[in-house]
Length: 199
Image (tube, rainbow, N blue to C red; front, side, top):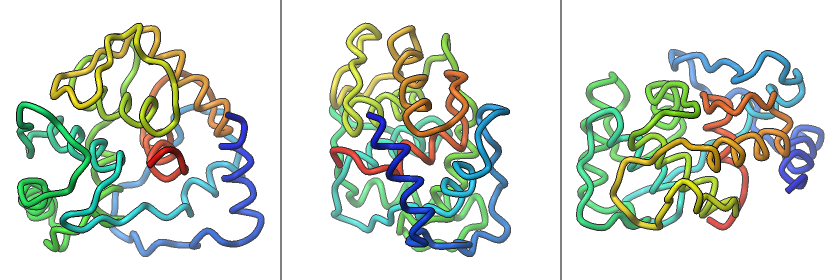
């Protein structure tokens, strides 16, 4: 999966990343590890968050749903799919209003940025919906095996950040050029979302 680093570096070098996403006022993201290179940090900072509107689909939407659930704005149904429906739009609008974001119901760059900060830093031993968000991205988008931690597709359950998830995070960070400390903070969260995978 070394293609992840190559893709981020190539995007930076070619100038195809949007410089300055107009996120003035958004929380400031910090590196998940102290030794992440300036080039990778710049690529991560400049990478554009994907934008989703009602009735769109994609694994990133499951990441967003679990993140909203973690911070108290979303209650999943018996099964959790990857569709951005009316219920999800309403949850996002509630979150946007509570955080003084523009209330649009569109999962845009500023909403992602705030979500990534509000989820906080996750590490081995943690449990909760935010862990499930990370696991969806690792397994469904990027192909890492999380069976050792009991991950199940579309299960509306709080995930467990066990050894399998830790190992997958480390491997992803190494591929992405992020200092591989096995923790998921704003830098790794964003990389999981913006890096192309099986979405």
